[in-house]
Length: 241
Image (cartoon, rainbow, N blue to C red; front, top):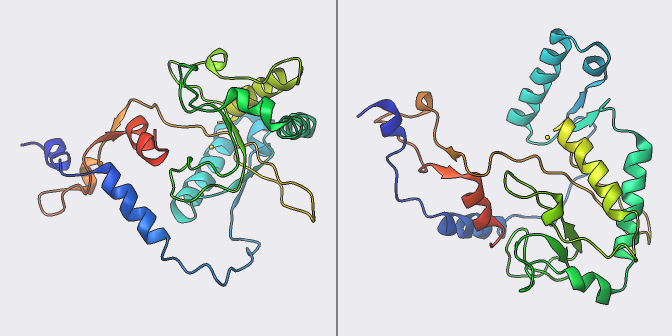
């Protein structure tokens, strides 16, 4: 048996059971005394130097910042990304207009409605129990666009252009910029009675590539904890698809 076989031999992993375990653990977290974020809690990666020079040195420096942020924090913000404030603000404005539509109109493009061939895309109303799957309803609305190696923008559900004539054009424009940039996910904060919006773009792995433990990280004495699994299968469990 070679090293790769040793690292892939665990076949007892149950993704549904693991999800239930993680959910149970999260319910035990003490959230009664939240702490304000400190200035250095979330690292910032500035890409301006790389986009200005295009040099390997500046790319390496940005990559090193990214590595440290991913390994030590798990979150980071990006500045100097070359996405204009006008484009970001215009996308937020379209999001605001979408969520201001009457519920009857938004409900015409509900996620997972029987007459739409692709699941996981469209409108999620308040109190939905998806993303991730949960027992209690979410306290937010959402509009989900999904693309992968087989799905494009044309496969998604879109609000009627008669209601929001610029929505699809602006959202697609923003998504293409996010794809070109590749990791940004941000939200503006609540201020008084104003609503809070976010327009995250998740740049995901190849959905069908099967991931397994790196051979140097496992052995006979230290076997892989989980068997190989694809991103699509793992997310299907988390999102309740």
